[in-house]
Length: 74
Image (tube, rainbow, N blue to C red; front, side, top):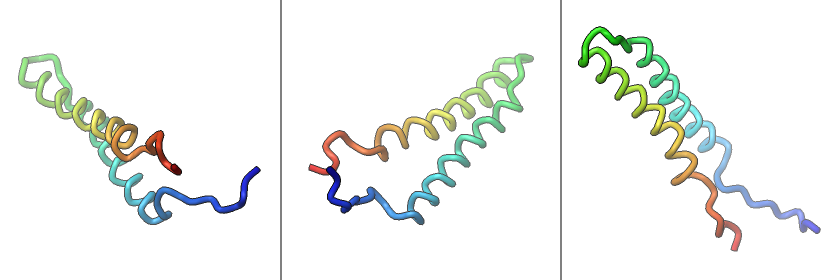
């Protein structure tokens, strides 16, 4: 029963830019994990914290603040 007037949240260019930004954060987090070492506390905590922080930002921001809200379309 669609009337054919589908309204998008954002345009293609904005979607591509957001994808590139958050995919870059995710890849940066994975790259930071390559420096993770258990030899000392500083070598374990700093790259691990950066990695988890980047991956957290890459996943949580798009799913919560940028994602489609429940009230969209009302």
